[in-house]
Amino acid sequence: MAGFIIESVLLGAGLSMDAFSISLSNGLRQPGMRGRKAFFIAGTFAWFQFLMPMIGWICVHTIAEAFAGFQKIIPWIAFFLLTWIGGKMLLEAWRDKDSDAEAGDEVTVSSVGARELIVQGLATSMDALSVGFTIADYGLLKAFVCSLIIGGVTLVLCLAGVEAGKRFGLLLKRGSAVFGGVILVGIGIRILVGGLL
Image 1 (cartoon, rainbow, N blue to C red):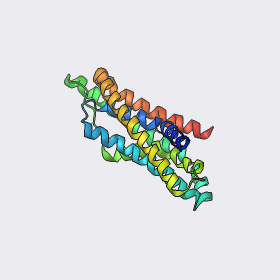
Image 2: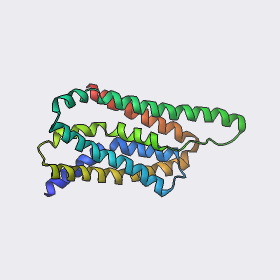
Image 3: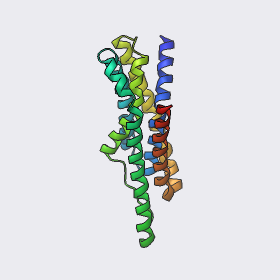
Image 4: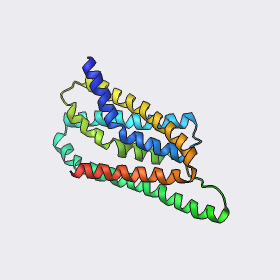
């Protein structure tokens, strides 16, 4: 039992690294974010990291062949979504820089919205679908508990990521949106390259 819990925690830590990085990016983007919003961001990532292994497990036990075919395009989907969001952040930062240069004000960066957060959650949890294959020999209850642990680990790490991002965001100010956008694009490229290799 202890081995199963340790294995699930390590699996959760490995899977949640991208979500942690994007949580950091979201914190950078909105340094004045309240605790409730930070929990909502972390909770969204945790939900997707819990849900995807369960969906993968169900697919393995029902439509394994179709799922194996879909798995090949997962890195492309994640790359497209993260690059789109990161590019949008960089464009917003560029526009704000130009308008603030004229007005002489500080950069104001838009906060992450619910729709964008859902896209981030989907993009970062795509690889968690594959975990359905690695836990395919688990029974339903064991697979559920494993996915729950993965979600819990993600929640804790993403809360830490948002808080760290908020602190750095206050220090970086003008460069925080650019840094956050670069993080998202970089993660998208890493997922694509990893998927192709």
